[in-house]
Amino acid sequence: MFDLQFLLNCSYAMVPALGFAMAFNVPSCQLVFCAVGGFLGYFVKFFLIHHGLHIIWSTFVAAACVSFYGIGWGQKYRAHPKVITVAAIIHMIPGTFAYNTMVAIVAIASGHFTDQTLSVAAENGLKTLFILGAIAFGLASPSMLIYRRKPVV
Image (cartoon, rainbow, N blue to C red; front, side, top):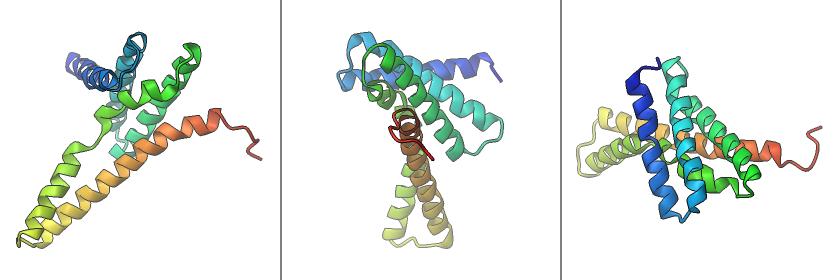
């Protein structure tokens, strides 16, 4: 599982994290934490996918791990956790599924309506929405657990 190509892919996930962190004017002392968060998110997501977990659930767990990581480093260095986490999860955005959805919708709108194009549009559209929801809930869940003021019971 941990072959050289997988570790290279994990390190390639650091590039968009750094790029978006620089685009969002993250302080230079925090850039390395954004990059490591991108590595961590990619590692967890594809490790879980490789071991049979569905892409939606593995995205949720990976986003939650990145959020826990961001909260930990944010508290240690007195930075807001979202400074680290938002740039670190950029590579999890389901661009291929969204693209395939839009191609199918354009095909349907241009008169090529078939059951197959409708099925492709619905399947990829729902997958896109659920992955985006998994990212949002994965980023928000650790904050709700850690910063909770009232007791659960």
